[in-house]
Image (cartoon, rainbow, N blue to C red; front, side):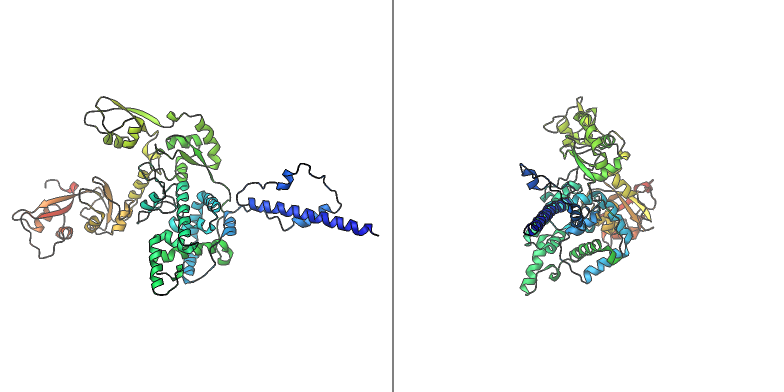
Amino acid sequence: MPSRPLSILTLVTILLSACASHQAQLTLFSQAVDTGEAPAAPESASSSPNPPAPTHLAAAQPVQGILVSGLVSPRPTDLWQQLRTHFALPDQDNKRIRTHRNWYIRHPEYLRRVTQRAERYAWYIHQEIRKRDMPAEIALLPIVESAYDPFAYSHGRAAGLWQFIPATGKRFGLQQNWWYDGRRDVVDSTAAALDYLDYLQQRFKGDWLLALAAYNSGEGTVLKAQRRNRRKGKQTGFWDLDLPRETREYVPKLIALKQLVDTPGKYDVELAPIAARPRFEIVSTQAQIDLAIAADLADMPLELLYRFNPGFNQWATAPEGPHRLVIPSEHAETFRQAIADLPPEARVRWTRHKIVSGETLGHIAKRYQTTVAALKQSNNLNNSSIRAGRYLLIPVASKGKESYTLSAQQRLNRKKSIDRGGQRTEHVVSNGDTLWELSKSYRVSVRRLASWNGMAPGDTLRVGQKLVVWTDSGSSPSAHPGAQVRPVHYTVRRGDSLSRIASRFRVTVSQVRKWNGLTAGHYLQPGQRLKLYVDVTKQAGV
């Protein structure tokens, strides 16, 4: 009889040991779920010099089946499910959140569009967030900021997925030049945005709602609102602060999106799946490369290459870098092998330009769609001095401008060609012109005028810059789509009247009054200067 209890005890000990070993494997498996890496073997198994021989038990197979059933869940193949696992912002609900949640529910087409855009970038962004142990809700922030459009540009001069304004972009190391705008670059802007958010959550002692509010309006705005509340003896949490309207709605929008992603069935929302896998690889180019050549090497459309590399403004990567391209995963190996066989000097095409008398580097750079800095670098020039008769090596695009469909200039051309209704006028900027002054002259809002021309209201104008203006019939100084409007400074002569001047330049008296702030009873004085906006195509015989 003593031998029977001993064998039962032995069997229990073996089973418990198997459970412990299986649990260790489960832990390692769960740690690998988000990263997509295969789980490592348990440390004890690899470090033991003499692993024990396997023990064969009749009950081993049934026991394994019981242990595995219900415990090992398959790795999530949908990014939405991965996000749900790591949501960390506090659960809450109020009128402001419900307002935005209901808006999203009523606009399924909007959710479909942003999901389609997010499919390219969201997995990468989530992985970067996980590396920093940040709330997964931050992966939804580009929906609030830019609708996941890396080419988004706001009236406040903010650009890219994360909507950096120029100053904040520079503060966090984002290059912004003629060739390249890091605010639109998916890799660089994501790193900068997470750096900024991490700084803000530390600044606000781990309060993510305050950090998010500060990301939108600036930390100074939030700190000032907190100081006001403290003086009044009020709470200083996000929901208690008197913040700018946009910021008051900013955090509720994010929380509303989090709720819809977390429980779409509860709100009868259908989210298109996003594969939980890498969508691109980052491949070194070592030097500047023509984007059309890069697209050919990768065997992919040039427009698709731009969508994965929206930071590049022109036909090539920047001479000063970054010397890398984001390549869709299915094309990455093809590109990597092809570029390895292409010498750096063949990655951009060159032409020899003979300098003629009177030319400057600025003239030459403009002609060949490059920069003075690039010309200096490629020709080893220490300054801007050049001599007639000598030659310069010029980097040139391998294809026509129209082929680079998502370059900054081609995007602007498409934007300016959209029919807004009414009369289309092309205004050429002259000295002294401002968006505000032109908006008054054409009786349109500054914001609309800026938007038609891919600008923000605060952007400065360049002499010679061409602006598209859309006006109602009769409200514009021009009246046909081929109009060329120029500002004219006219000095009043003896005997002049408003009607005579208006007739001479083919504008109306009311327009002359408006452009110059003249009242109905104002009398003109000889020598007085008036500013007029005239269509030069209508001035024959004047």
